Image 1 (cartoon, protein in one colour):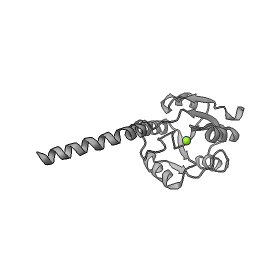
Image 2 (image 1 turned 135 degrees about the horizontal axis):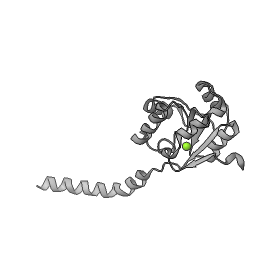
Image 3 (image 1 turned 45 degrees about the vertical axis):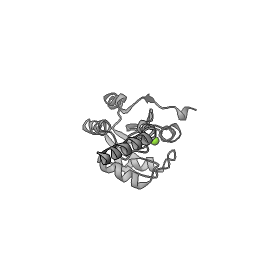
Image 4 (image 1 turned 90 degrees about the vertical axis):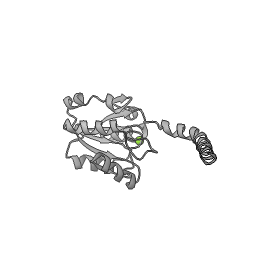
Length: 167
Ligand SMILES: [Mg+2]
């Protein structure tokens, strides 16, 4: 049970006390991608999220993306965030997480794992012995909205077209 408990649980990335993390010696951040940095069905991270990553790096943190998703997805996010990313990480197994730490050149005690899932991100991080931060998943509000709105949108467009043709 203890392995599923994060050291810190926040509603969003901006609630992570980066400076406090530095005071306890954290210097590297391993960050999950889907629903942590970007909604699973979105191809672009929000501006505030990109800014948050940039701010963390400006503070001196090293950032590495660690995702269970495929490499195409991770490649895209590497480009957006300008940091290295590991795909098919198979969290909560430790292989890729260890690689990520080695890449940053830190000890485990100097690293935090940030993610939205208890059974992958938190469990993996805790098994490895890094500081773990659970973030409430980014929900894709637009998905439901667009689903509801699409038929209406189509009808409106159809009417506009007819109107334009008759006028
Ligand atoms: Mg996730």
